[in-house]
Length: 544
Image 1 (cartoon, rainbow, N blue to C red):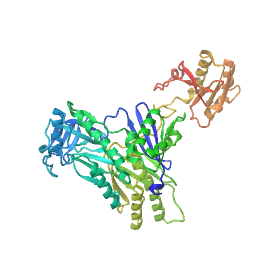
Image 2: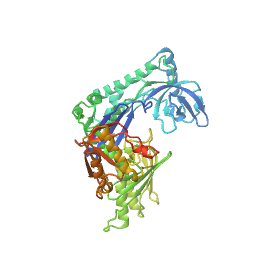
Image 3: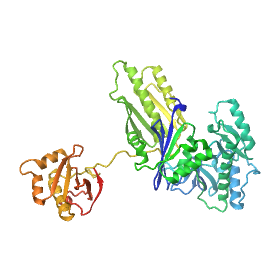
Image 4: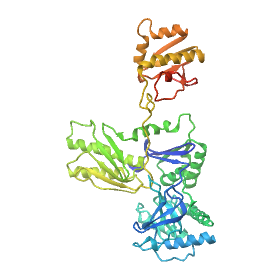
């Protein structure tokens, strides 16, 4: 399916401390983004930091930007005008000067040099986060500052105008370059993004003004600031995603809180007013991720084993340095095809899911994929071409290498943040995570103690007990049965219901209105008789 035919939806849910955004393509979950409100560092944030250590062996420096781990600044991340930027920052801190239109450029930083020739220990630097903190590493930063907008990227201390290579039309490239050269401020470079194609001067000018305002604000914050301090913050998760992805193929944006709805509506109105009607406020009682099938797809898509279809499944392992994916055919065999054809079809099915998994989990670094063996070089080439096609919608920079003779493919994918890991396993309802369960022989005493509490202390008129079929048979066998003895003892209506889906020791009590009686008890390592005594607290807030 071509990109123009894919219908996209964003599903946004906000919680007290987190925002989650799901990108759906043809109802299939392709990306999940999570941002905690307490998150301190995001790609694009700008800090006034202080150089703590110069590391000549690494040709790099460690900069204090307020993180537990100092930020890493490599020589290659300085930018050619690093000396000019540093001089301007020093002047702005002391004098409050903000304009760079008349700045005097100092010598450019050579491609091969020493970082100690450009910066010194204790120096104050304006740096931008290029990679978020990952694992035990601090953020990676650069002194080459840029501000990304919807159509343009503003680069202070540069005069170049460059255009995205994805804009193919020579006439359009010439039009955009001429237009931007006429509106850009002096000593500012501009990168024209793919989204700018077909847009007019007013739209580009408004985007440029917004970016210029962000730069002026950052410079203003430099004056009298003491490092480490953040002087400019990247847009939040929702706005960043909309800025990067919003186009005509979006069918709807569903938001579940009025605050986020207002924010998204304003953003769309600013950049794409004709699409304002696709922003919709979701207010049903059912959670929005359940309503649009996001929760179910998360459960099925994360974890070590990912089932695809036709018996094909993937095993995904994550390590510090790389990710490894093993493709398994399972029971997928068609008798009408040769083993080579079966292997190729299995690999093609897996490749489509792998391309999705890379985006979904935001896997970066080196990815090694062990496909089912293909002996024909023509088939290995076909699989390589297919993987390129499957990943063409992945906006993250990546490189795909052809399969080797062992049918192993290597992919490098830019890593700017921690890979998304979502725990899909649930606590065992039987042992509740302790690894221990009560002895089955105590089930009769436990049920009897609970009945005594419910009838004599809580005053229930009658109860229904739902149990596993084995326990049901045990309680009703013989004459008189255990159930009959309980009825005679308490002189109350006691019903027993068999539930096939319950595990052996699972049981639930319901009152005469069939509201479940929640008995609050804590799991314990000590599985003595004392544990069978129910806590004297219950609630009736759930129905079955």
